[in-house]
Length: 404
Image (cartoon, rainbow, N blue to C red):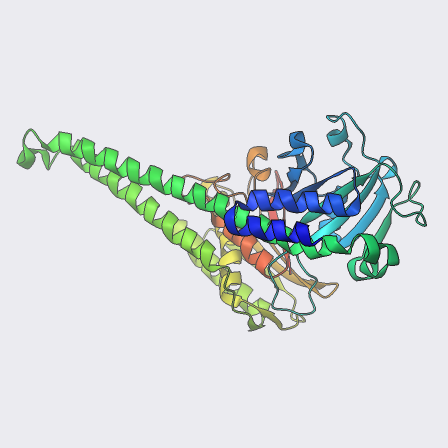
């Protein structure tokens, strides 16, 4: 165990987070005596294999309705005989030479800590270990799966003797996952900003060529005016991207205080109404249904305003841009199982599949003139609160559901 931790710490200091995650996975496989294993994390509305002892699996998507999804969403350890478990995503097995048999799926706790002590810990992903034979002699899972609360599982004698080291390694995996995401987003942001600056320089070159023959006469030409507008547009978009990226980086320092979520939503609704009236005065209808019984919780109210306004702004733009008759934005709050639930919905045309399949992934759902980071920031804010965000879309509109 000491050798595994020494290697992981060394890699965290002088190598990439990907190498650190790969080494941590191998350590978990060695400690448990598993035949193999994988690390899965969120990728938009799906889960994705981030690392695996089978290289062909890396990058493949798995639905949230899978065993890994249940592990993450419910925060439980699942031990199951995969062929008999309806949640086993068999399409993965179809591409491999050997079938999954006994599967141990363990939630990977996020590095983020919510401001509300009563809330469940947010999980960043799932560690899955595969075994050819039943790992637990006293647990029959050939006909039914078993689920365990993490603390209860760790108290089991077999776990204490043979698997406890895995739980020591999980925080390292979570840290590597977070750094990997941030680094990928940083690279994409810098790449996009570089393109904006190159575009501005190109239009400046055109501007120079347009005014060189006769600088005074050229000042009135349409081509010169167009060149200047394009330069200004590229620089403005680049500046907006830089500002938005700095906003994303600042999310790692939340400020939790006692907060009335309904007050946040009322402010957001007023801002969304004003935004709609600026675009098409008097056309947008705002419907709110805020449960007055919501308890005060420790939340970052300013960041939540940003998150919910992003959702509302996207909804308003979708309805107005598509000339929806009687556009209506709905904001609803309720309490379910001691969790705060907010829905933001519209009666727009819904999202195309290629957009819905890539929600929350940086720069994947970028609209014209946007930064490509709006929904990424929204999801990160919800993650920081230990919450989840889901989306449903169709011909009758789109609804985002946030659970905190």
